Length: 59
Image 1 (tube, rainbow, N blue to C red):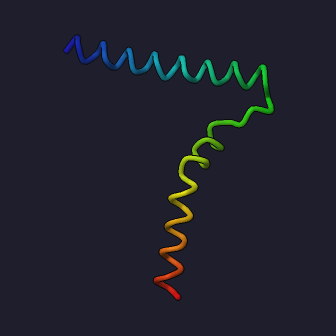
Image 2: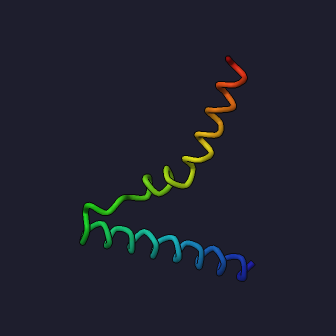
Image 3: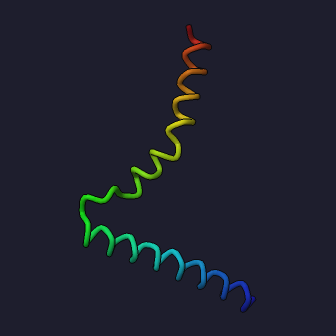
């Protein structure tokens, strides 16, 4: 059980440090794109493909 708690603490620490790093980067450079733009960039090809498939099925 202790090993599992250690993994959870490490995961929480990594996520917290990533959040702090992102907050610091955005504080020093507010024009930097935020995480929502990165997610949009990653999933944009899938959205385009799904829209094309949907247009073919409905039209």
